[in-house]
Image 1 (cartoon, rainbow, N blue to C red):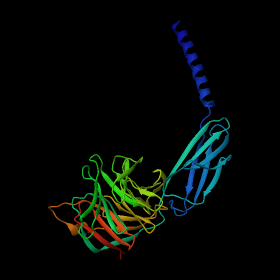
Image 2: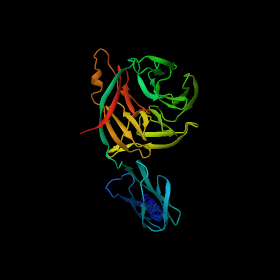
Image 3: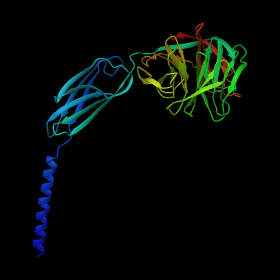
Image 4: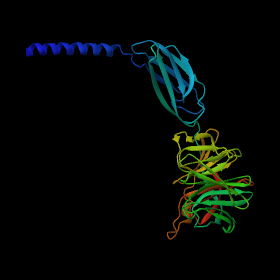
Length: 357
């Protein structure tokens, strides 16, 4: 009796297994697309074309269509399992993604991805500096921004309880005008547009606007990035950094980010963009915790030149009075003179940039 029962159970299990296997084999599988990309220079470079080859395996079914996207923008649609597409020009640096959505005639859909990174086409020019003049600088100032406007010198400082904005005399370093921030704020970069001073804060995700003449605070604004670092403007937009590789272009009326540009040289992305200055069509930025600054084409994000400020800190060496990093770049737009200083530095330098031999 037990033997018959065992045989009956075995037969039932075999029937169930067969039905299950039959259902599995007949279940429609997701189509898979292979995405191959070809670059003229072997690696993706700004402005180059891209040849994309798509091969779709519909698995156990027929392909209805395949859609090709670049950064979520539809490029083309095809009913063929194999097709090509030519992207005429890569229009932005940084990380990008091709995506193929393949759909079978039974409605089953599969999504495939291919990531790539676009580099600068420019090998940066190497520049060094020559000191033209040395001026005194307030050693209590943890400099976060330096600005020259109508031949007047302005500075913003950081550290909670020590942050503020200042107008000072170049020859003596004497403070002529100041605004001290509330202790809860850590001040960051500044820029002057018309009769207004714009200032960032470090981690409050909040910026402030001041009247240029009175230093009275007249407005504030918010931003989405976790931190605020450097700030400048190009006559149309405020340009902001947050310590990443990005420049954010902000509408000064709405404070909305209108566009974002990744900064690259020919070897890859450049992070830790810090204090900013816009001059003659380029954005200058020092690279935090290095002796370097870079000259950036704001239209593309490509680094046109790299400036080596090595040795500048050793000019001020004093074991009894430690100083911090380079963090102030400004141009006097009326005469083209360039000035640099840093956190707690005793000196502010007028420098001239020269090509490296």
